[in-house]
Image (cartoon, rainbow, N blue to C red; front, top):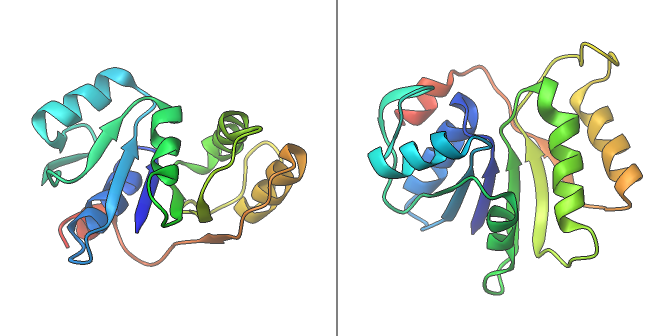
Length: 159
């Protein structure tokens, strides 16, 4: 499966590392909004800022170019899965960026999941409400869901 993880904080990186280590051979791309961070992660094969000491698998591709990360979904016949590993405060903006990048383009995506939880401080909305509003405004439609649980990013990254 092709997995595109948007957000190279602790959770996004942990999900990307876990997916890239999967024996099923997932093709995983991790997007970092900070180009310097993406370059450092690609060079050192570690996210020293958020998950120090956790090696990034060689099979994990890291980029700071959103269009490049999203284009990963269109490589081959298998649909990709889009994972938003961003904090709730950045969820609405991330949806808008993705919708803008995919506007008038066919993306081979099976669905989208997010990893954040809580209430948006400005609107009081839950993540699923933000997702519904963002997709409605963009005119896009993808199956959506949430990935959460009682765990810590470091534990997930450690396997």
